[in-house]
Image 1 (cartoon, one colour):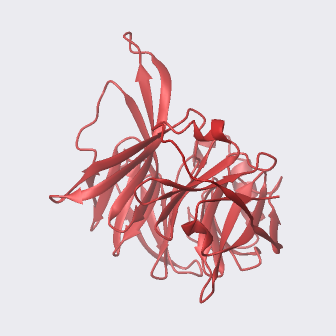
Image 2 (cartoon, rainbow, N blue to C red; image 1 turned 90 degrees about the vertical axis):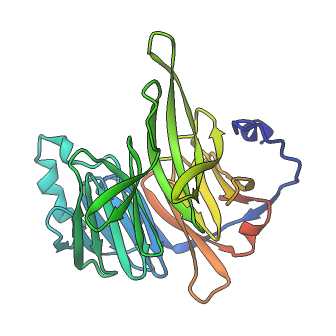
Length: 324
């Protein structure tokens, strides 16, 4: 345990004690996607709905039991069911560039926002098309977040942009250090601060990338700009793969193959999940039950989508979650 915590690059000394709390598996929400479905890029849950962004340019809409009710074909905006109707269209394509490798979902005020390539699309909770914003063709969107009805998007190389009308206005970083490669993968918002997961390549004197540093920026608004307030560097095994979300003013992320961390909004570690038996770069979302005292975490891992319940008081304590 201590060795795993020692991978946190800021070398914070953890002086607290940790006690274990079990998550309660919802046996009515276990979905096996092995063999039939494409890779899940992002998960967004809201009340009784769960949305899955798939690499074959589709969004699956799941009910409270994990059943696929509808599928949005992002190329046509048509609603399709079952999901396998999309399979022949893509399996027969020799051009695999038609598959998505990054993209993001966000749900706010009854609208589902989908970002991929250089496109933002909006749908109602039932998957009906509402609107579309097409940005410069050079952009490659890796995530999207909504703050006070304002749309923020993350380009995986260029950084964070604010959408004004149909234009993308860059807000971070102001300049790019050409000597170091930086890739931006995930964007979340807590209060008025932006949190970004990044990968930075370090080069030797001959310009060859020799190592990668991964971590999280906290960006706060100052003088009409967003500036870096704090940075936490993670270990080399900190690949996140879109498992990076905000919940109850906490930031939750996966790190490596078997760990999930929760930080508070100042990037201090609060909670830790470790289960090497089942995790392999999991993707997840966490939701507060409507009018309830529990929350739940939806985790996609090893071709399965599962849901676990927990007491809402737990994220405010320093604990370790056990998933068996």
